[in-house]
Image (cartoon, rainbow, N blue to C red; front, side):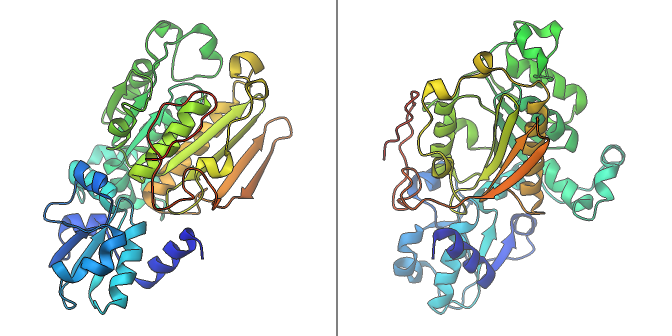
Amino acid sequence: MDYADQVRQARAAVTEVSAEDFVEGGTSYDVIIDVRERHEFAAGAIPGAHFIPLALLAKRLAEVAEPSDRVLLYCAVGARSAIGAQTAAGLGYTNVASLAGGYNLWKHYTTRGVGRPLSAAQRDRFARHLTLEEVGPAGQEKLLAASVVIVGAGGLGSPAALYLAAAGIGRIGLVDADVVELSNLQRQIVHNVDRLGEPKATSAAQTIDRINPDCDIHVYDTRLSADNVLDIIADYQVIIDATDNFPTRYLLNDATQHTGQPVVHGSIFRFEGQASVFQPFEGPCYRCLFPEPPPPELAPNCAEAGVLGVLPGIIGSLQATEAIKLILGVGQTLIGRLLTYDALEQSMMTLRISRDPECLTCGDQTSVPAIVDYDDTCVPARS
């Protein structure tokens, strides 16, 4: 049984408590246990939680809890804690639960607040969401409490930012070190001629602020690097990879093996695009699918190979859709699937993809990749 199957089996067997219910105080617990790794616990934890890594849970659980105690386990996103809850049940603990969404979702709810009734203006603005059974007022509140960081404010990041802001995402981060150029405007619709020479992240922030002034926008006018990636992505629930280069894609992939957030991937080339969701511990990672980048001559950038202007609009919109589904917990996401799109043929195809047990990033579950800056060879290191 691979890890993804183990997680699914555990979640089916244990009690899961939503972060929203936990924050609102619907249920109290005698003992709260953080089953993440030490570096994750050191970066932030639920107040009063005991730290016991998952690998040591069976050995040390009795040190902090009695079998009759009400015990809540949590990790980053709810996968490891589900396995831990199943382990605890096997040891005779009769009232143990796993925190769905983990520390990441708990932090967003405690930061933004939950259960706040929608204002009259919000009910008017999001009226078409409220009529959807899969969204409704409760779902819209989740969107308002959610946060998404978009790495790349260009072709893919433009539609993603526009639609996420319009959907009511409460906090959006924009990461890009480039400036707006005239050649960008053929596809990067978040910018305009009045902003030529301005930083792309700042330009994008100005546009989405005009769409939804209530959105809390954070601008990172910098290149994502080994020095800043963990600090930038740590406070966001979902990451959208709207980059156009392999070193940054592999860096993001490695970083989320530490932090646990899902990465909504998108890429484009000439008339073709693809999208997927890489959720650590639940499905394949980017390197499972692409162990190494292709040679530079086989992967020219948009300036060299060209790109149909509307193509990033299609793929970026798909990325926004996946982010919203992940936040709402509805539908079938692209975890474990790769969606490909051909604009010339006007066709889409979805392929099943699996974790690679020999993957250099996630194949060894006992260690995580070191956070390093890659060159075009993108060779990983281990920590």
